[in-house]
Image (cartoon, rainbow, N blue to C red; front, side, top):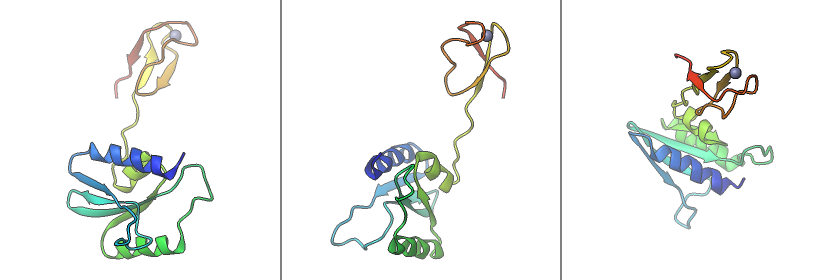
Length: 134
Ligand SMILES: [Zn+2]
């Protein structure tokens, strides 16, 4: 996945959150080299997020990017490096709540943790699932 695609996903996810404004920083002649990909504000606090490709150890911060992030952090901004939407949410202290757990209504044995119940129980073939009380 390209870094640009990750930036797009993170931006879309953060835009949906109340109290958050997020902007992509475009590299222009006016921009300062090494500044992070995303910046914005969450409930009055400035944040700076550098985005890197997921599952790619070669996608690392340059020395300059590390220095810029540190500069922002020292000045009081929330800073971090994100390789996914979850990373970005964690940086902002907004970890997603865990997905609900579904229990097969037939055998009452099979459990499945996801936003949606599975189509069919692999144990008994039942198609109805009850949501486990949190
Ligand atoms: Zn079952």
